[in-house]
Length: 326
Image (spheres, rainbow, N blue to C red):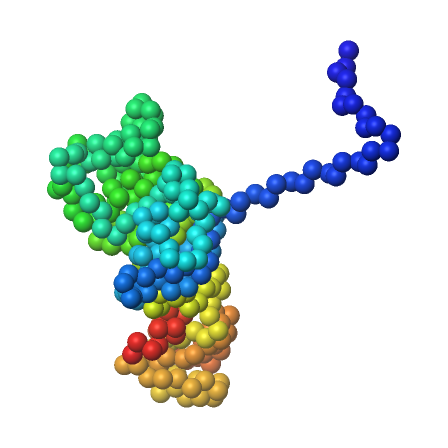
């Protein structure tokens, strides 16, 4: 026998309005007009940015631009004086505990407990998140393998090098399986191989659906991994751009075994180069334009020995917006 349905409305009763779906909170990081002062100094002054899931967002700017102060607010360690911050739709000020369960925070300076071994550092962090011990041990083992510290698991954390401590810091940020990662200079002190491995790890974490916000001064590496960049200066966000394409103008450096012929052919093509050492630098509108220029030079049988960007798109944008520092 089928179950009886809901009672029919009385005659003349207006129909109930359809149930509206509840809006889902926006995932990722949303910062709007945030300001934070220390005494009379505005460390962060009206910064706004959006970092989305499945993307790596680069936060770049000169020293003192407010990057670390902003990240401390994202990590619930500082409160903004004004403006709003949301982590997966949660307010770090009023919902700090919920935010901390979702966020993985890696500060620039990673301190360790001198008395603990490497694996014990991560196990204590897991205990703070109330992860059951058997699950925590398996999680720690996986993370140490991920950051290539498994062979150092029994070593005292105090004897790790700067680069090894950075890798341990990344593992610590991942203990709670966060949906949002906030990483302040994660590549600092890493050797070239470790930087390549870090790049691969971050791309994989973003591919899993996490939001990754990373600050760094190594612009060439950020160019390779970041999907989006936010440039800050003097506490303000001054530019936000996707990195799928190039900026309006790119600088390419060209060298040839016959520099005079190269210069003559560029002049014939209407390109005005600038000499930099033994090379010539030319401005092009895009990577497509650079490819076309190279094709024309080769077709004209100019003996080209090198043709490459003098600056990446991210470096070009950064230098443009910090021009006043010269």
